[in-house]
Length: 131
Image 1 (cartoon, rainbow, N blue to C red):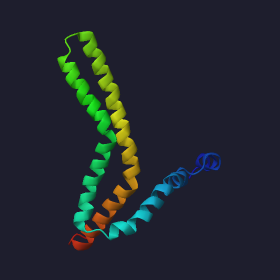
Image 2: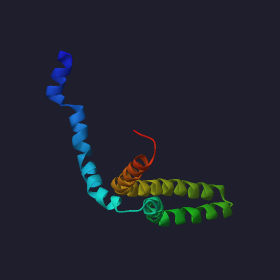
Image 3: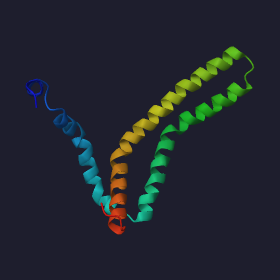
Image 4: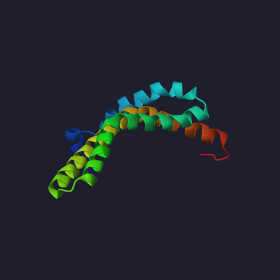
């Protein structure tokens, strides 16, 4: 390690340590969820994916319904300026739906990670593949 790296570490800090510190709350949530995942059957673990998709769809349901209605309105609108306004509104609502999905995904992240980890653990434990 060079002198410049040492000096930068003193003033800026160690990036790896900062990254670990930033992600530690997420790791703690995952570790807290793991025991409940160990109790689930393989079918119940598989069903978690369906649950996750349903939660995302529910979070976006109202916005997606508005988008669908606006698309129908746009198809039936003959005035090109009004149609353009409708499509602009659709674009805004699609951004909102994306953000709504992101919020739910971030909420689901610890549980989803715990599900994947438990599934992988069982797969590799029960398979002939050794890691």
